[in-house]
Image (cartoon, rainbow, N blue to C red; front, side, top):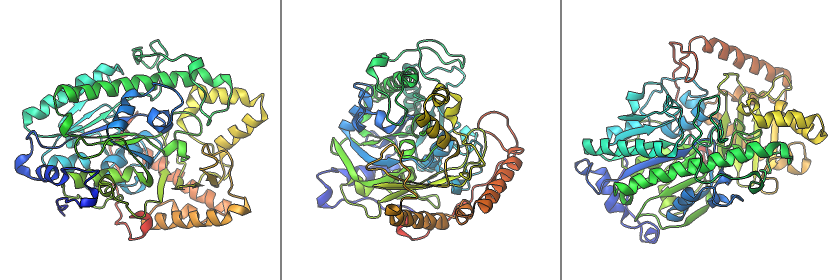
Length: 527
């Protein structure tokens, strides 16, 4: 189906000017490659907490001036989320437009996805497609040529020097000009993913290129999600210095747009793939885990400095948005909805919840979790929270987790928090308005029984309509022996699958599972 040309209503013109003319040019094959054709820069950070960004209220001054400038130039979404809290599953939502349990990209392995991804669809519509860094995390399979005309992958160099991103992006634009095509560029800044900058070369091989400013420990207050002890200060300061270096890289990329004089006809979408790599954040489903900065810059079309606080949006909405803007045919079932009406200044109904999930991390140990976030609450279902399994979050490999363990020997409150981190419980409910860091589980508080039941019903409806395998566990959540049977089944499936997968990282195997897309139902919950 070809999406119709976009026309404007007079009421939207104050926000969105000259839109129909520009989009008509983008959608006309005869004009592809002309100066007026819309380029797309999809710019991402890696493991960046939404509230580490100045425009989202960071208490650290001047950590993200380049991201903040993007917010000043465009539209910032206050309530934006990603679907998954780890790299490969999250990033594949961006380019498949589907939930991980539908696309099949549940972990860090390749999947035979049955329809065109975002770069493939845009390429078929005349775009030159390019990716810089995070290449294997940005596609269902490791076949780079299937998706990208240009690949700037510096993994062998193990370098996060900000100028490297500018150099690679400069080359990408040159190549697109040679082809006479507009570009769709996925530029993925690796910072502030671990290992953090520490002023020295790490054993992992990353260089010691410093950020433009190095913060001292006394300049960085601890994040409230962490226990408030000095044990965490060194690593959290290292995190912010890595945030700063990542922002420097973003500045380099934007300078390349200006150098080529294409910024005026480039749509910029900036997102982080999930929250920071600290306990209770990455690989979890709390607000700190899945809320993301989301900024859209479209010169001449979006009024500067707009902040949307009304709509809850998520990663599944990216692909339908870009397809509609470029009048690119929809390749098949997509879980999200285009954000174009919101960008045009309209109110979009049924934007009062988002659904998120976690299935497994790089170790391939199944830990199915599902959650529904509303504007004031989050309800989480942990299929593994029977007391028989330990969390497999990535941050347990790093200093912050070691600090947790050491402090737990001295402080009972930290010990209790650590035990909850490791074992969790089957259900969690948090008042995110009054408890933004999810520390007071209300699931057994009778005052919140109605809220819990409402969110359970929403989550169950979504799981049914998206054919979610975790529904089998959710339906027996009150029967721990049966829930454990469900978990043992998932573990057995994972062990068998591990012998034949083509892994994104580590050992390579020949086979690939096939994604099974589901035509979504008509419920308002999943429109």
